[in-house]
Image (cartoon, rainbow over all chains, first blue to last red; front, top):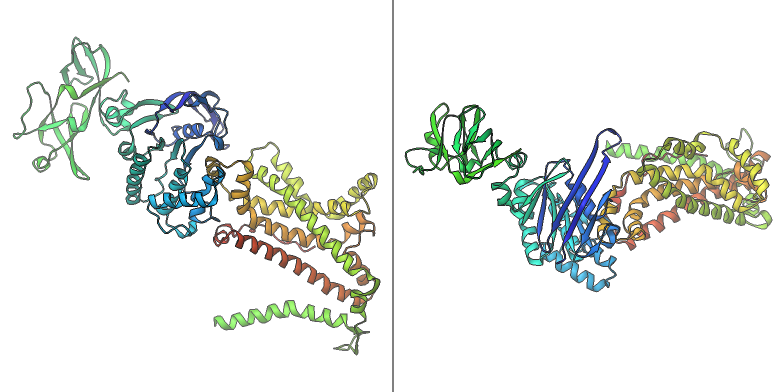
Length: 358
Length: 282
């Protein structure tokens, strides 16, 4: 298998001249990106994801650790010889070249003949929906079109790995979605391996086969989107993925008791004892009303509604239980029956519960 | 209203640029033009005859002037590109000192440095040679080239080169395909100044060349101070023509380069690079 492997990568550097004291580092990162996989590095800005991408590209040199592609060690190989491609946040089209020449640039560097490389470039431009734009200059295109050219230019040279550094974050939301779709389709068509950096959860979840969540120079958890969401390994990840229901408590004698005593539940056999955080996804938490059959083994919590929120197609209720404000997704119609101050019972099923140590 | 101000501007610039030239032309063909006559009594082409023909060595001087200016400019480009690159992109200790030394010739009168240079060149045997004059011309011209290129480099993000790198471009290809097109307007601005300043050097050329390297200003000066205004005027016109033609030639070659690159967009992106360079008449 031709996979991209980052092996014990470390890198420290002081950020800028302005704040010399603040040093920043990647700590011992191990990561394997499989052939043909769409892998996203997800994290807030400044978490080191772009640094990691540039290390993979070779634009930065690691302090220690190695970059492998298949069985070859690329650590000392300069970026131009790695046969990776990269799409940056900005399109970075060469302003003095036509769209076709821009697209064919990588092939030209590979010494492909003029006729052949222009043919391939034009075919790739057709693929990204820019048929007939071949002889335009970059400044005659819109931002979205420019980024399409950048994508075509990166793909046409048939890269071993395509690296993408927040390529759509400079675009309008509508355009971003369109580009996402395009990228997803092209990736499946060409089967290219992609390492994608983003701070946009939706983007990562929609496109990726697997996601690596980064924070403060560490890779916190790697897994498929559903795996990360349903089985986060820490409260940090749960919080980053937008799960707000995180409850500190204790597990002892087969029971979990929250710190304020408002929530108690039996836990599965074999759950280790000690201080734990309970993580409850908002859609696992439901408001019990007359219309819903509450399963017998469900865990019930009493509380009162603080407010009902509407967010792009679904309603959420914030329910106060003890010291906790629980976010709870509502079914259609439920929102109309609920109002602030109302006493409610919420319930969740044993299997939707996740305990983490930190 | 707009039309009127346009005509006024045109008239004003014609007066400002045209009248001195008109006076020069008139002087160059006059014989004994004295106060209080508004126009010369008689006309003669004696001065032009002297300047353009015979043993005056004008054509040779023009050739040497242009040769020196051309070599100086090429050397300036070769020196200034890496210098500007380093000054803009690297965090070097004592960068201010390097900059101060590079820009010192703008502030320090050339006479000061040229005396020392002269002594050194005497020991090295570089006086009275074109090479010596070329080397000496570098000090007043290089700052302008560096200045122009610093502006160019500071508007060129490293991302562009990284992008080219990621597409497989080696160092030379990156420079040729990405950096050079971006620098070109800056190089053009710097080269214009470099050519003009080199062409108009009298003092440095005279001292280092010791009268053996005869450029046009070296021919021209004795006539200005020696009291043959007709010949001096003819030389001045010739000098202006030479400078204008040199700049025009550079402009044309630049335009043909852009046409070859099929470029219409570089002007839009790269324009404004000559901001920050100011012409200092020498």
